[in-house]
Image 1 (tube, helix red, strand yellow):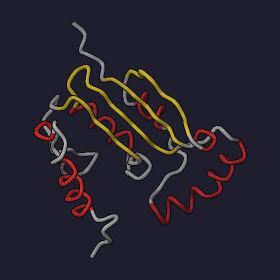
Image 2 (cartoon, rainbow, N blue to C red):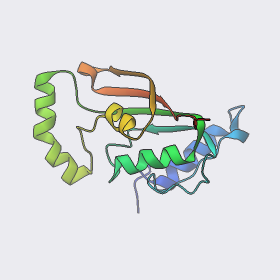
Image 3 (cartoon, rainbow, N blue to C red):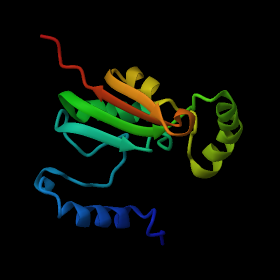
Image 4 (spheres, rainbow, N blue to C red):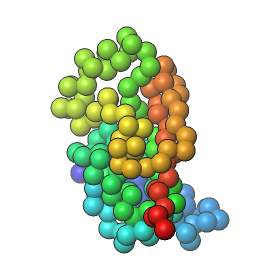
Length: 148
């Protein structure tokens, strides 16, 4: 049994229902899977979007390498994540809480999505931090095109 608010099947059903009302619905494929082993061919997608996901996957570097594998050359990576805040006292609180959130919620408060994306080889087009002292991180990266 799972709660409707966090049950993957229920979330996919809700997303599919909403997708039917969008003009580009025939170009969007929703599926459940492992971010570290996507069931997609190499260079098969234009954009990978991850929202509040890198904080919970076991190996965020592997997940981003996998995103790079499935992206076409020049494809876009869009991340919206929480991460280390710009505020020293809030970041200190994150450091105190992080062992608990990792243990009990599998949620790492201190992963920096910009550093992770750069470490996985993405060219960063834009990155910013919003919200309370920059708690919300947005990253727009691009897969490098193969050199000729």
